[in-house]
Image (cartoon, rainbow, N blue to C red; front, side, top):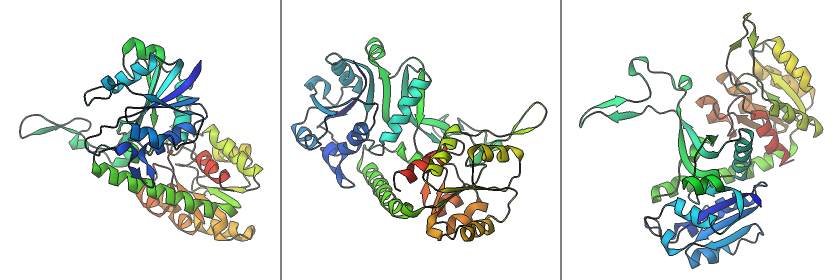
Length: 388
């Protein structure tokens, strides 16, 4: 029995954008983006495209991969009023599998990395179901009458700063995971204890109207350009420098019962540092804070250079560049706050966490999908090792 299969419904009768599922976006038919993401996910054994359209079938057949299987969608489940659950249940009646991943073709920003990590989350938490979400920090209001509104998620008298506002999770419709057993019992795509997988905020958009199409196409083109630019920049990296708070940690302040300061590090970053060392890339930590915790963590990870209590990070950056006789293009830097900007602007390639301050995002070459403390270094290392 297959443990994980993916199901991608693709109806031919779209009204807002005729045959949108095979209309080209950023150079490829729309359905190609999600099919490729599913095919490239190592956990997914088969990818089923469910459609009622011969035109969609003809386009899908151009994808030459043994994982892809095209299945016919009945007329009853291909109407304007038919639910996606009806497609899933019809499919489940004729196929043997343990877990199903429903993927919406209208979310082309989905990646195989998203699917890999979501399945890992699903398994680690022993969840019954999982859905993809984005985090948003918007103040929501509800109509209290014809002319007046009331706030739903904040107090206007104590308006929080955006960086202090926890925000909320919004279903982005990219994908859902559940078991065949629960699907058939509840006739719903998610049920029981529902876990979530957080995707980058820009994946909030899914294609329903032409305006959505234009936004997502720009995002896809930008992502592809970034990938090409990064590949050329990352070929000669010899030194990897990172900040600590807000990069290796979540920027939180933790204290023991005795008042001792604590920091929470992500173990995946530790493996990332090890992978860099194995590639012969020197590593350095440059941080404004000065604590024994950072010293201990750096020693454990065998970081080559550790500078604490540094206000002028650019001077240390230049010192390291001269020490190792490097060009600017051979240095990577990760930072999250305004004191990192001078170094981010000098480094050959600059990265920042997804929750970095806006000023840092504006000067960074690449904004990561993870937030500080969530394995930021590991994400950068994965990008590096794919390109060197």
